[in-house]
Length: 121
Image (cartoon, rainbow, N blue to C red; front, side, top):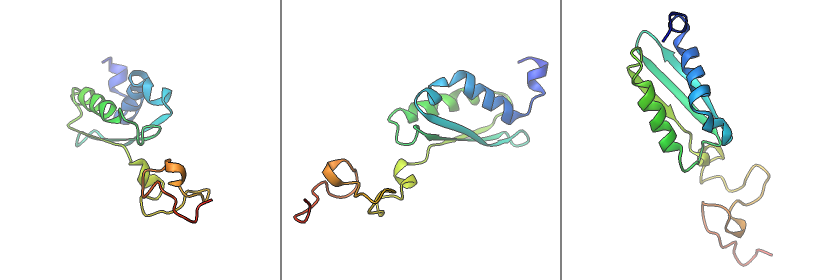
């Protein structure tokens, strides 16, 4: 790392690294945000969202981010969070989608029954 890079705030360096080394996040419709980057404690918290929520390879992505950033001398603890897509939609207790349509209609939802019942047209 050059002297000019070392002078940049930790948050900025992590954000630049994410954009440069993890383009797959944006390529797949995901987002990343550095929520915490404390140079005094070495704690870094990154949150992935957008297409990362519910993505089947998000565990691999988070593992790769953690493995690389833990090699940085100034980082002691790294947490990468990926919110559960179901939580963002109101969780399994929400009966309707934002549009007011039953998410389980036609078996497309993953909560509840895919059988709409006898009153369904």
